[in-house]
Length: 281
Ligand SMILES: O=C(O)CCC(=O)C(=O)O
Ligand SMILES: [Fe+2]
Image 1 (spheres, rainbow, N blue to C red):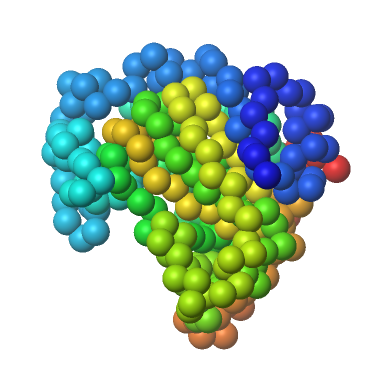
Image 2: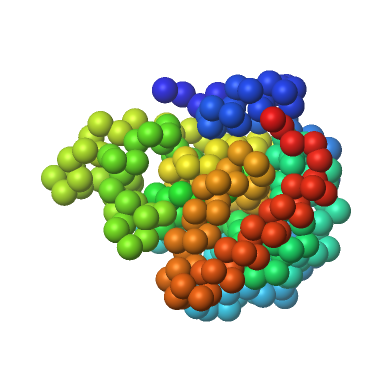
C-alpha cells in the first residue's frame, strides 16, 4: 500500500476520505502561506535564535549547538533525535511565521485554554533532527490524538501502519502506546506476527504536511538535517478514545488523581465543543 498525496483537497473530501476512515495523507501544499516555508533553515535559526535553549535526553543545548550537531550528524554517528522546542514556551517569536492554522485540522478542542494547563498533548513543537536520527520507537500518540507534522526543511522518512494491525505490533504490556518491535531492524524470531504487518514508508519533504489519524502506529527517520512543526488534535471523533486514555494514563497515579483528571478533561471537552464550531459530523 502507498501513502496518498494530495495537492488540493477540499475540507469535506478530507473529512470523508481520510479523517472518518482514519487513512493517513500527505498534503503537498497545505501551508503555502506560511512564511516559515521560505525562512526556516539551520542558518536562519543560528542567526536569529542562537542562544535559545532546550533539553535533549537530559542535557541542555543551545539552538546553535543543535544546528551544528544535526549538520554534522551521520548514519554512523547520529545526533540525538528528536531535539524539540516547545514553541509557546521557548520560541513564541516564530508563531506568526506558521500561520494561518491548517483548516483541515479543525475543530481542535486542544486550542481551548483549559488544555494548555498541564500535560494534555496540546503542545506545538519544533522538531529538529539530523541524518540517521530515528524516533526511538514505533508508537501511538498518547490519548489517541491525531498528529499533524509539517516538514519545513529537509526530508524525513515516515513509517505508518494501517489501523487494525495492533496484534502484529507487540505493544509494551505496561506502556501500550509503544511497540516492542524495532522496525528498523525487526527481530522476526521474537516477533513472528510482525512478518504479516504491512508498514507504509514514504518521504516527506519541505512544505509537505503529514496527517496521522489517531490510533495509527508510526515512527520517523531523519534523512537530512530536518526542521518540522508538530501538533496534535482532538474533537468529537477521537473524544471517546481520548477519555479512555485519560483514565488509563492518570490511574497510574492512583484512583483519586484519575477521578480528578477525568472530571477536568470531561469539563474541558464539553466547553471546547461548545466554543469550537463547526464540528465535522
Ligand atoms: O519524529 C517525528 O517527526 C515523529 C514525531 C512523533 O511521532 C511524535 O512526537 O509523536
Ligand atoms: Fe507520534
